[in-house]
Image (spheres, helix red, strand yellow):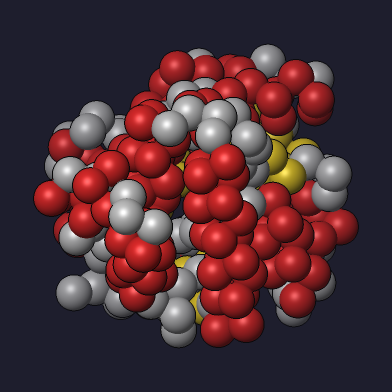
Length: 258
């Protein structure tokens, strides 16, 4: 498994190194606004507080209510609590059960903030883009309360606020629906082609495509990168370091690199 710092060049099975570098440059230098997914590109939210465990506890809660059968056998053992939230919402749309489930998930996400791991190079990349007057927004399926709390702990909240677009009560509009991306684009007054989405899942890629926003995939290991490539992502990086280096190179003597 490749770590964030083992390989820092763009990866693609579809083009050579020169074409990869030019494609990355076009994406990065041309962006007036950058839309970030949260869990993955900005941090590993559940690095110290297992998402598997959260999913299991949510299933146990449903079982205690006598409602475990709302989930399929596959869903009952799924490690992603967002998958469970989506499943419950589809079967009990706009119910008190869905509201309670979402609030429980939000509390678990908030608890995970204390042990979240910052993604390598994400903090300086965010600060550099902000210093270059590139607009920044978070477009995520996580709770906006969770995002704000994490960013505040890193001193990054001012780089994004008020443009944090997370989960709402309209759970059917979670990514891969482009709803949160469209909210960000509308609020920031920018055309989709002038924006860039940084994401690490196929749902991020699909949402970006539907919104008409260019996409930069972040796959911190070979498996994650291949999933994005197989889904059609043309530009994927193993690390955010080459993106940061590219900004420094194009900005000249601009922002300090501390």
